[in-house]
Length: 105
Length: 486
Ligand SMILES: [Zn+2]
Image (cartoon, rainbow over all chains, first blue to last red; front, side, top):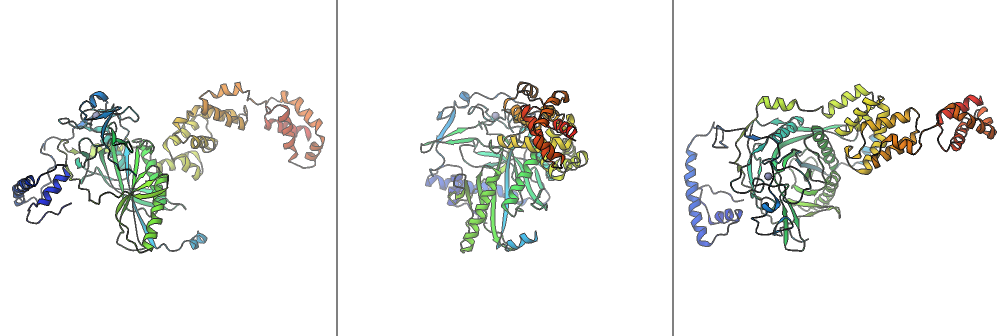
């Protein structure tokens, strides 16, 4: 995790860290572009800090009038394994096939 | 106790344990979609655009899962969050098709509860519950080692999970074990999860640290994963206490890390992952609007709470007049308690039924290692067999063997008794000739008995049993012998 600097400057390291978390690879030039973009976005959002939010409950959703949307516990049809796998880049025996994610012991 | 105390030296280190338990809730459908919540179907056959994380699909919360969570919260004495929201926990792993898990971050549905455990010696201890929150389960991965691929089955994705986090109030591996036993008992009473560790409907991770006895500062926390049974939890923690004690004695520092319990080698092994702190970047899930929990909702869920173990214990004590140990066993599992009560309704001697349950029934349960339901023994059948034995129609030994056969084959007790001609001869007229001939043939034993050797009667009864190929009712035979000899 990267400490946010006090003056809200976004460093190239921050950009690389965020890109890594998002599984995006950036070239040197792109890193510079996004550093600037992110900094501008943060500066823009920073204006909110001028508002006194002392007694304001954090907004967790913009649809403030809508709440308690449930579905009843009643089964609905699933789709078939063939359908489920139809967009998969790779599959075998009814499974999605992916590069192995654990190391050998 | 005093003698025992001498054996314990003052421990050099305090053990601090906290447990995180994941319960799969036994709803009909998944937490955010209508796919069936079932175990053991063919891979990727219980999926839909929502649980596959397809773009444009929207999750909608299962009301039952929500109510189950509140039910657990109330039973654990937790506060219930009045405004509930869901958050996205972001990470990349192929078992999670959306690349985030819908979970709860800073406003868990339940907080500040407790579980009371009973330590050996009868002392009670309260273990705090920090929080419990709802989240969706991830899919299942199979790894082809040493092949290049992993295989993903997303049937489990979206199964409702309740994560219950304890306070670090647990001071020994044994306490951790007792906490889990008590938690499982409570959850099974509530009927919101079957708590089957083999099928993964109850999973547990343990956090453990050691610190110098009495010290205020906690040691480094080691997390143990891959714990497949309550016994594994206890054993892995015991292993860690020993490992960390040795390291601390040697002056080594304990690194904060995650370790895996290795079931075959019975050791914990460091996962040796990249030491990069996880950054889940939680934020409120915009796909789900907030939930307000009114007092009305809480009260209506409270009304669905069953009789909990403590009340049941008290009621059993008053109603059945059984000993504390007997009651403790009967109420250790809701199904066992119900089975006992249903049997007593038919055969109304609680102590006799209790003896059968704790003896024969428990023995078969342990052998099969499954639930009372899977034994295929109904309360009616058990009552029928007990009735046969207590009326003297069949012997106690035969009754046990009939019970065994009923459990093994599912046949009716009546059929088994008839087919194996297990009925005892209790008819005095039928036994008369045999009793007379035994007396005539065994004068020595008869004289022994007359001269006060009580044991001689046993021998004579044995002779009657022999002559009737075990069919005589030994009680009736004994009575007849005594009458005739004196
Ligand atoms: Zn689904």
